[in-house]
Length: 426
Image 1 (tube, rainbow, N blue to C red):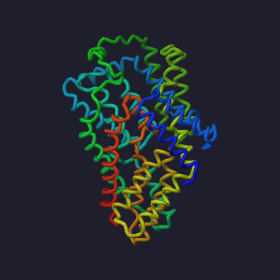
Image 2: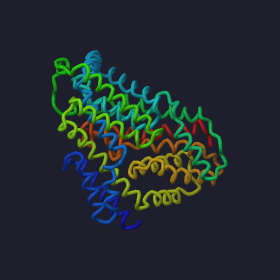
Image 3: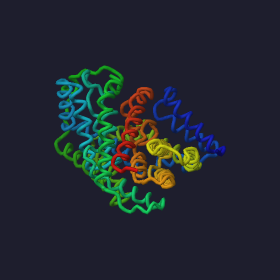
Image 4: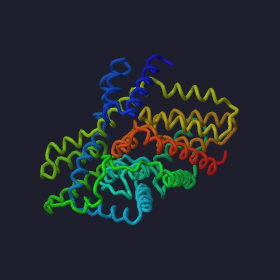
């Protein structure tokens, strides 16, 4: 291990400790970590602070402003009242219904869709507090549900990567059952449902602002935007969502549509400039942008490849297939989160696991399927887009966050490994 690797790991650990202990305001530790990465020569300024020019961050910042405008509309007022009514009839039932609805909706977008989880968490942030369904109980469960389609039919991206890594490793396998691969994803989603039902008890019973808020407040709020402004706000919101969804087809222009929509919101006076500025510069934006720089710096040290080679050598050629796949799933998911490069990490670790399976005379399809999917299932470290947003919007302390995410992490990977082996016997 090189000196830059050791320093980069130490800085990352220091950042996590600061987040955990809350010695600095939320969003500040990643910025400090970026400064230290440059100071110690781990990376240059452009890479360290590249998160602030990252297309996803620009999109997210703009969308935060649009969501703030949306909260002034009667639609959100109705949504809040509906949630309150659901909660008053039964908090746990409302909790289940919320994350199941999110999982059904994610079936359209597919696993790990940035546009969808940004949209989901933005809407969740508008939920009004009630004693029977505190937002602390909702944000994490429904937020992570955005990564788990309950009807996994849109899995073409991951499926294509499975075929690619099998080919890159020289396995000779050119065809994998798409139906079976979809069922593997379904098993993973069902495992999340099981954990979400259990995890309700460990999520904190608090509001985002950590204060008691009158449950009738939303009913007293007056939504008095002129009809034309309200309709224009809806149009801006829809345009932003469509732009995010179509980004893969139209390129960078898709990321700019939320920004243009936010400009429209400013121009018609739904939000003033101070409100726009406060939302696009919110702590969650600083957190998300900062961790991208930290992740890029870690990846540039060569840490990913070194860890993969070391683990592969340690496992040897006499290893239980379940343990082999599970270990590589852990490595892929953790390092994909740390480096910020999911597909790049998958392309490092999946061929290693496939080659190990082939040396043991085993069919490597299960390993390829599980390891590819695992790249989108880290989330116990709040230094990637989705977990950072969940922690920020939910205002969870790191210990509260980990109580939910660490068991979730292991339950999902165990189910993913078992499902892959069940559908693709070795």
